[in-house]
Amino acid sequence: MIRNKKFIAPAVIALVLGAGAVRAQNATHLLTLPDCVNIAVQRSTAVLKGNNNVANAGVQVLAAFGQYLPNLVAAGGYNYDRGNNFYSSSGPTIVNENRSQFNYQVTSSINIFTGYYNYSAWKAAKLNQDISSLTLEYAKQQIELDITQSYLQVILDKKIIALDSNNLTTSQKREDQLTMLTEVGRKAKTDLYQQQAQTSSNKLLLINAISKMQNDKIILFQKLRIDSTDNYDIADMPIDDNPDAGRYGNREVLVQEAIQNRPDLRSATLNTQLADWNIKKYRSGYLPQVSLSAGLYNNGAYFNTLNVNGENMEPGTQQNIPTQLYKYTYGLVGINAVWNIFDKYYTKTNVASAKITADNARIDLQDTRTTISANVRQAHNDYINAVQQMETVGVGLNAAQKAFEAVSGLYKEGATDFITESNAQLVLLTAAQNKIQASVNMMLQKKALDFYVGAIKN
Image (cartoon, rainbow, N blue to C red; front, side, top):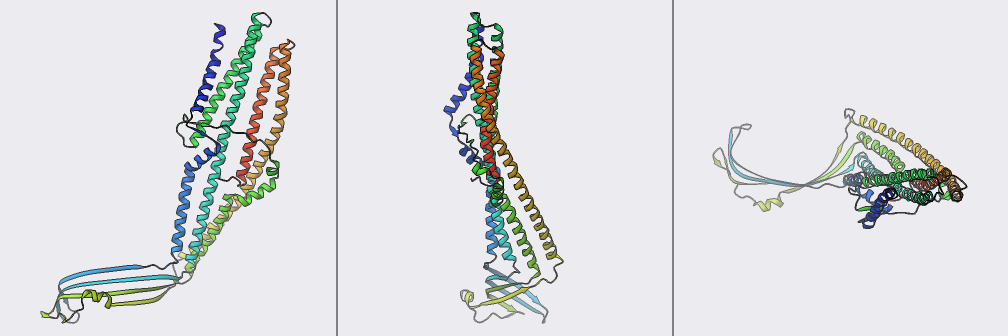
């Protein structure tokens, strides 16, 4: 009975791992890192709103450009009046009429000079469109780094599970051997009890590792806006832990690359230019505005009856309505100039406010440049640390592997005790975990540097 009980926990672990494998095989979608990034970019609230902002900025550009074009306005009207009208200004007169009146006009005007208001508004709208596009680009880059970090965490969890599983298998095999050796009297029962305790501890490590991976997958799918994790699984991927010193080794080169490429810095630079154009736009209020207008006008009427003080005054002949629609048409062309000499400080206050906004934009630009430089330097320090970790854990894993092999051989020959072998196994597991963690961290730090220098391409 005791021998059967000790296989219950391994069976449970195998069942959990087997269920995970079955889900992976039957998964509707096996998501790779590019798949996850594309899904996140398409579904992200920041990207959806960013696309709307870009579209809205394009509409504003079109509206600003439209101010250069002439407008065209058509209007028409028809009135019918009947009854008595009393006029007393030139003598008492009573007019009884039954009349149809109509008119139409077609007018157009174009701004010849607006004090550079229209030009400044158009330049500002164009800059705002570019800023919206850069903001959207930066949001996509942030999403890619975030998804990459979550994806690599799941990959790390999987590799930790594999290490813990192998470690548990090693303990189970040793426990089986100790069980047989104890039965024939070649090993003390204390070694068996200690091994059973270690096997139980290794099972707990594996259970916790599996639980962590499942939680990290939930977090990743939440970022992807995927409700159910049953129909999706994460594809494995090779870990690129090559330091690539030629690309990432020179910190100052990376800083200069970031200054040139970072979309948020380019956006901040354009924002200062936009603020300057807004100053010019409001300064146009000090200048006169000139416009050219032209139009075609028509007025006509047709009397059915006309009586003045009781006498019939209806004209003998009247032009019919179709003839009046073109015959009584006249045109008008004019140039209008407006100069607001005193506008109650409206222009002055707008210019002053725009100058303050421009000054704030330059402050933001300097802060952004300083922050970018600090981010790159910090990320580069993390990268150097990751390189040093890779060198250290590589040596440690090699030494731990050799030590475990040597101690295991001595333990089988009875030349050392169980505690020594158990410690060697634990050291080997820790060294292997440190190695895979350092490898994943190396890949992540390179990706982070790509983000901070603006080299991530969506």
